[in-house]
Length: 218
Image (cartoon, rainbow, N blue to C red; front, side):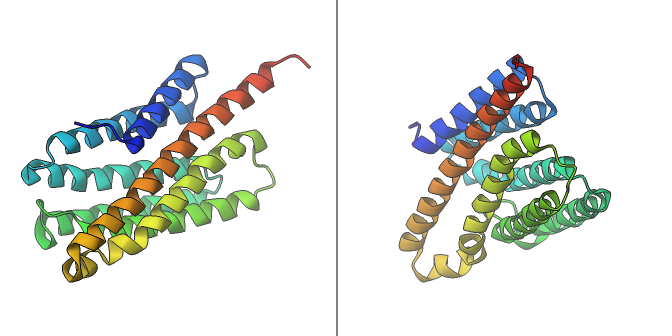
């Protein structure tokens, strides 16, 4: 098994988040630390079971749901708007139903659920835009908190926006020229993952620095 740059990026983000949790515990760290380590475990398991589709694809499909729920929970948690939080709860309910229908009946368990992945990416892009818009018009925002949250929300937005088109056309383009499309898809996804976890790492460092600055004598 070979560790690629994206796996190192995931590992670094997980370690930095864990260090931040130990040094300066916060709600953000408590949320992200288990999720990041779970992500790394899923990626490693995917590498080890790359030829066992009965294990790999069901795991990846279930992780689409886990990832979506986590990001929505995080975005809802930083939103100061109660209406947005309630709306996100309805979105979660609808997405779970769509996931179950696609996973159990439509595309199935041993095929990568591109329909679910596409819907997840679209919903998360919209959710991130709503959160950014809401924060920008909230005059009571904690500037130091949102300066670090910007790295997380922005990277989630870019990552899902970048994956939206490839996921949406995965089935169609995959049948036209599967070899070329798979290479392009992996290249896009690979670079977006490096960007995502790189921004997560920077976000944790910014949060840690802002907390130290708050406690430093002036």
